[in-house]
Length: 163
Image (cartoon, rainbow, N blue to C red; front, side, top):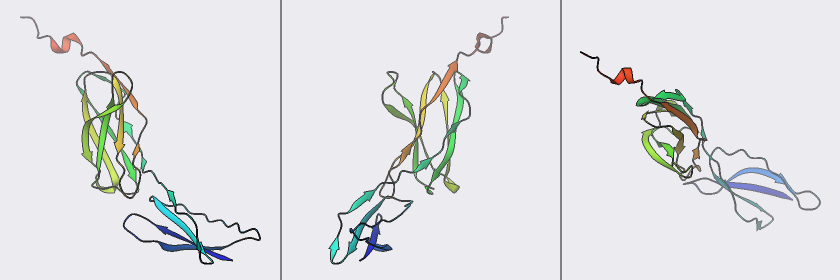
């Protein structure tokens, strides 16, 4: 018996996306690789399956310009987001001193080509991560934390010359 796979994403109704046939025991299979979070339903022979939600997370890359800096020096966190999130908000977060939750310390917008760069002056060692929140199309993503080690500024750099 023929069965049809229907799919819908945020802001769209169900649309047929694939057709298959059941085997002798009524089993069928479909292979999909959605870019956005999608709801699926199979229909055939005046019957419908339950609706299945397939959540898709954004793909987020991130790197830090340095992992060891002197106190007060800037560190730039940069990368890309896929699918394209040009214009979306993105956060730089720092882990609490207890090693638990993260809190936002800087915010930026994803730029052209879905690239971003967030620069933050760092005064104390800590763990930082980049987060893009989810929305109706995707579930968002956070990169694992990056430890930034801060070394003291040499006394010679802050002590005025004698005289």
